[in-house]
Image: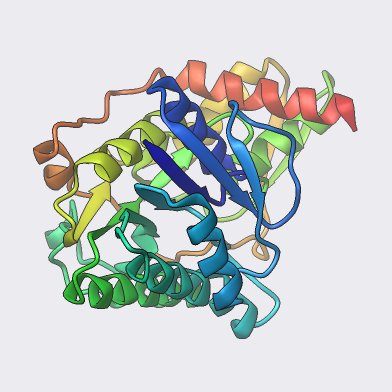
Length: 308
């Protein structure tokens, strides 16, 4: 079975490739530029994902049975850049999939940011909650979902996985824990001061490897009717507690300094998803060993810091 994966060189993409390879599937990894081979996937360069003809040519060359669309960005210099990456690419991919002689099963990876603020009475949030995103990122990802729903109405077997908060080794510095690990790695053994944004938030954090396994399960088992599936654990964890545990496993003295300029892509205080639909597909996210996971995140940041 051939699987085409976009965003294959990213943090989540690398984990998904490993999961697909572990199942013995033939994988084609799409990225904007040539990348080192990962997990024996065959690399494909698509430098202009906003070029509909280039996207269609890629689909025709691969003829995949499954498409997993992970590509996207959390921020950009302009709204047009954000929409090209998060909406236009997805729309082109859906159109190209629908035009194939045999349409592939398509999974678009969305974001919990699509929901926007959710009252505490509605947490853990279900997929039926009315989305009211209040960030440009969330708005763009909801637009991607709406294109998927329209494609499903046209007969394309497509689903959307609303991913919550994956964490793990190699996570980007644009994410809170990735930034904190990078800062600690650069301090050395003498320790120092850790600049953070608001830590008084609760999120549904997931081990990226487990999240990747869940996405593969959804890609293989979804009903293809435009269903939306939360990829989450249903358990909230405090960012402050995780930061304190990251400091503890670092083994160096670190003090916290609040930096008001450091803001994430969501201004929601507490956010946890309901994993009921994911569980109905036969997959439940296990409780991670948080200290072991944080240790791997920090070790990867230190290795990266030593190599640069």
